[in-house]
Length: 234
Image 1 (spheres, rainbow, N blue to C red):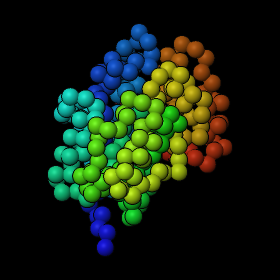
Image 2: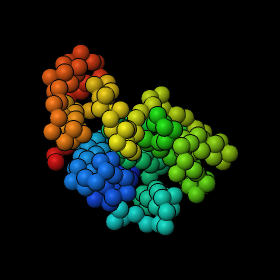
Image 3: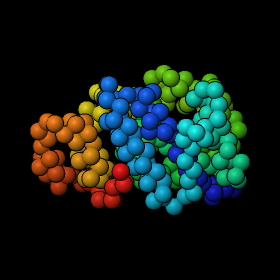
């Protein structure tokens, strides 16, 4: 009988300052970039804290390896060596990811070894692996820098004999200024706190343009996806 009872969360992120240098959303504005990634990092860490699982934050200073694939694999390896049956990874670039996402991945482990949440750009907003799948997974073979990360993981999972499933929800990822703009436009349909909405909208417009906060607030009152959860401290 399948036994996946001990599950851990891997919060895999860069430090805010380093992320701001590597992926500047606001060109030439280090202050806003660092504020954005500080917010996104704290938000996903708070979601991990509020879950029912052990969680491990592996940020830049703790990552070991020469490239992304190596660092990501070593992060999974370090947690599996602590005796877990499965690990769920989450990052900071998809603000829709929350406790429900984590529970969906956990539930899928009942009969699947590889669980992925796909972004609108075919990236992955979460990746869940059982220990069996991890021992067979060739991280270096995944096209991490391409626009086909999700498909690449699926193909390799199938080739390696691991059962695979994608979550139903497809989310936006924030990797550019245009991505953040698109996210802001659809923000009323996302499970993010109202305080978080005000922060992101204010940061996007740098509080120098007329922001229609009343319109944003009203849109939340008429959507079933709004959930007050408390915002991370800044």
